[in-house]
Length: 101
Image 1 (cartoon, rainbow, N blue to C red):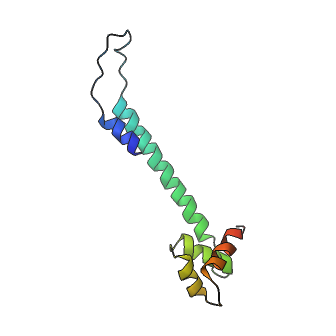
Image 2 (cartoon, rainbow, N blue to C red):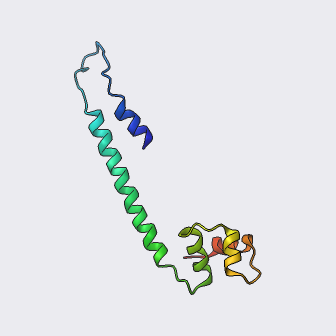
Image 3 (cartoon, helix red, strand yellow):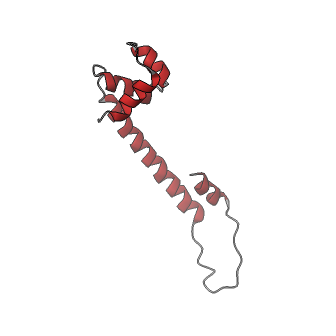
């Protein structure tokens, strides 16, 4: 997206003697449209992510750990301390990585 914004700001005309040089495109308009499309796509992905996170059950151990990691942004160590039961950070991480959801 930064590349697109930089392209939009670089609006200086390029002078050339080549035929067809008068075919000027709306560089700023095209870039603004691309940025808007990317932002809309990001919003749609965030909606899908939140929907998936909301479907995680707090009653299933692995899903609860995944929720803490992905939604609350807890470290594996904090999750292990939160759930207790002699779980280690690596143990919780490996269990979540193996879990199919």
